[in-house]
Length: 300
Image (cartoon, rainbow, N blue to C red):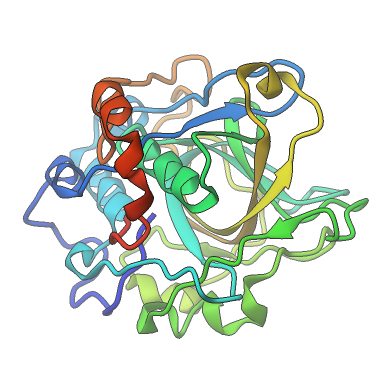
């Protein structure tokens, strides 16, 4: 996820001078956070190496990876914590399930996150909520980004008060109703970004009104909420805080390249990446110094 200060000067499909690895490794590392699945059976979140579904199309792979860090990574800004406006994030992943159109009691999209950025994503979540372990909802092997459920009133879903200040998204969801969680019976804005486009202008893209096919690559824009865990397998790992990923919009950036592309069982995770976070040894040695990371520029 990336929040940026200035609009990119080139299209989102323009090549970047540094690789995703170079950019992620250049970040000041922060404390890692373990993210577990909610529900009866819990465990760590599955990640995907983007070369599994898209490695045989280098041009497409490069385009998707460029979205992982954003098209203007040099202008990353700090996340402010003194605003009551929920902070808007985006992240990239491969769809494992979608009921954006057909959902009855809620609408959600589930994605398998890329192993290029997931360690940093989770570390930033942990930093914002001051937790070393968190739990999030998953379904069909993917992380769930959802509207409120029919039974939810919103009272039991405490929104993050973490805000951001940037003109980058001034034309995007920041101008709409303070990014509050969408109701269960809304139409989640879904856009067609399969052709080159400027990220700040994604709302000008043609809207989609059909379900997104599993195996597709998407950008999900969302806000964060937090709640106290009362049950589930994650509690056996010492997790006390759950995080809701409140969907705001979705941008489709690539269709599955093959009808038989791996959707679930063959997803792979390269756990040696850990880009943008401290190693377990460094983390243990620097726990007492971790209180000063709140003002660092973040990329998720």
